[in-house]
Every structure is written in C-alpha cells, then in structure tokens.
Image (cartoon, rainbow over all chains, first blue to last red; front, side):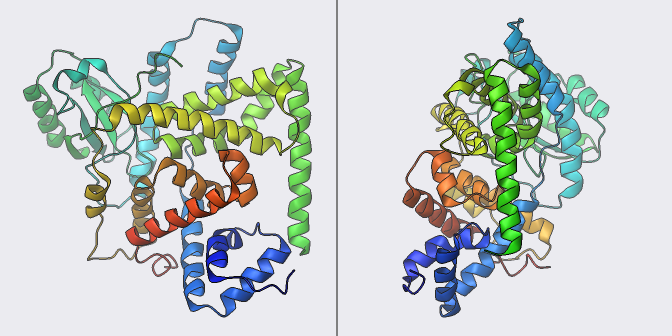
Length: 212
Length: 199
C-alpha cells in the first residue's frame, strides 16, 4: 500500500498527525512522499510544527491534586459539601498565585473582551445589557495583597485568572450596587499602582453551579 | 518502526497496564487505587478541562466529576480502548456539558467572534515568542470548544486521530476536518506562525 499516491487533500488533512508522530508507518511514508513534492504542504508543515511547539509550551495550571482529591473524598463519604462557595474560596488563594506567575510571564497587550464561560450571579441580571462585572489584571502583587485589595474594595472574584494574561472578573459584593458603584470600583482599581488594567466586563457569568 | 518509537509504544503499553490494574482495584472499591489514579491524571485532566471551559474553578469541579464517574463506573470499562482514552473521553463529555450550559447563558453577552478577531494586532507583528504565545491563547479562544479540544489532544497530548475520535465520540473524518478548520482559523489569526516561533 505504500506505493499508493496520496492526494493533496488527504495529505493536508493528516499533517498534524505527521507532526505529532502518531501516523502508522505506511500512512506516514505516503504523507511524507507527498510533502516532498508539494510546496504548500511543506509550508503548512513548518507552520504546524510551530503551532505544536507553542501549544506544548503553554503553561500547565499549577494546582495541588491533594486539595481537590480531599474534596472528592468528602463527596464519596457523603459528607456535607462545602459547596460552590467553599470551592471558590479554596481556589481563590491558589488562583491568585497563578496570576502572579502568569503576569510575570506575559508581556502581551491586554485583551478587554472575554469569551470565557464565566460564573453566573443571578443578582447581577437586573440590567442584562450591562453585566455588573469588572475585568482586572494585576501587576506585581502578593496573594495577601490581592485578597486585601479586593476585600477592601467590597468586591469578590467570580472568574479567573485567564490562562496567560491572568485576567480576573470581579463583582461588587453588595447586590444593591449601582452602575455608578461599579464605575467607582473601576476608578479605584485604576488608581492602585498594583493594577495594570481595569474596565467594565463584556460578559455575564454564566454557570449557576447549583446542580453539580 | 524506529527503536525510539518502539520504546515509546512499549512504555505506553506498560502505562496502560498499570492504569488497568488500578482500575481493577477501583472496581473493588479500593480508595488508595483511586487516589493513585487521581494523582496521575489530575494535571492532564485539569489542563484539558481548563482549555475547554476557560474557567479554573469549573475545570477543578469537572476533574472531580470525571473521577467520580471513574469511581462509580470502573466496572463498565471493557478494555476496548486505553484507560487514558476512556478517562479523557469522560472528561470531554463532562467539560462540553459545562460549555454547552454556559453557552445557553452567555450567548447574548459574549463579544461577537468577528469583533474579537479585529482586536488582534494586524500591522505590527510580534517578534517575541512570548507574545506569539499570548496571541495563540487569544486565537485559541476564537475556536469552538470542539476545535480547541482536537488541537489540544493532537499537539499537547500527542493523540492519534483514532484516539481523538474515541475521546470526542465522532468519526475519524470529523476529527480530521475539525482540525483542518481549526488550523485554517488559527492561520488567519496568526499570520506569522512559523516565522516568529523559532526566535
């Protein structure tokens, strides 16, 4: 079968698996033979190798397995769950430390918009066209400082950090907060030298976490 | 087959045998075996579910959802795939359920995809690899979760297209075309891919 010529379309579809080395020997030989005679595929191969390298190098989230296993163990034991609130609180401190790492590693321009599915807070829906959320990216800040700052501002984290930029989404704890309160939160964040970026968020948290 | 590739296959086979042994003990309600399997798969699962859902907390919850299924349904594993493929398949279904639930909520709030793409730098191309990596994150966000899964499974987890088809539960040709469309989109968003990455 290795003598069969492979069409350009067929070979082009298989390039990612030529790159990751999982094609069987017969298929690999046929793709390689096509690539040797096809400029388009050779160019694409270079690009796919670069893409593979970038994807492989993307950071892994450095969380402790033991902490989450303990949570699973309690579920198996039928212990009362700490619930979503508890989980988020537990994740909060760890997430804060990740943000520092992410920020240190990132020199990217900041992205205002977000498409990430985020947590819902039904209390935020009174003005559905303008979610009561703020996106923020911190500069050099310790876990404790981050927690203190957000608490001082009367806010809490509902999402984040995003994978590389370390963007958090915040809400005001007070459910009666107005648009003016939120604008004030943005202003106060921007006034803090430890904040690199703060702006009203585009997207509303989306997952109610009630039926996990 | 090269010697390296053969060794890799042998290592994978040993690895799968070890996983199957743990799964056998889990079937007998052995908590220590569950703990061992959890430790082994926690970070790969967390990464995979995080890439699909985009939310750390949701990813953590999803990992535990997955391992709960492993605990309860270990007896249903019939050995028709590697244990890793079975577990990643559960993770994909659980994560996609989260993503779909989020979509229902967020469709009207999410910035339209074309608008996001316009925010990508188009004139001044980045020259540093770290900048390219950040652009990659943003480009990957522009893919569907289904496309992101295939990219991640191919290039981070090193899965064959057969394994990916089993994990995501679709025909092999769908995997190939899904990856093809993902590549085309990434290429349009990262026009200097392959030109800067070596720097």
